[in-house]
Length: 106
Image (tube, rainbow, N blue to C red; front, side, top):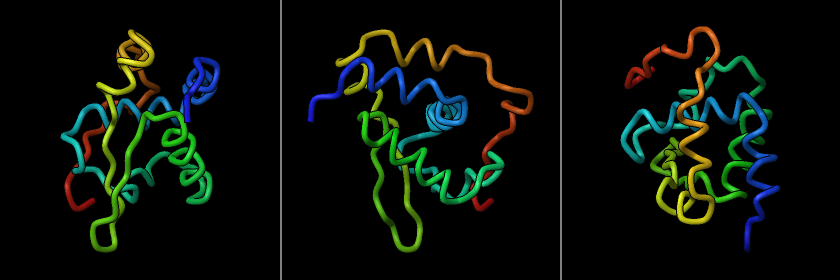
């Protein structure tokens, strides 16, 4: 499936999805389970939808490991398709509390 620029922009238009991307960019690949994003104050079903949208535009890859679903930000692949777009998202200042560190086992 070829992702259009419009689809990528639509996916990144949502502040929750941009925050997910920024938080994933701050940790090594495959170390951040979906369950560690509960602090984003949206329903679990809404969070699942956000992950699906990010997967759909090629920004996110997920794999199951036991009972956890781990995430990887597809930086190189997305950057090759949309040069500079991910850099803009990562450079964006997050909302208050963005600096909260992810803690393993949380």
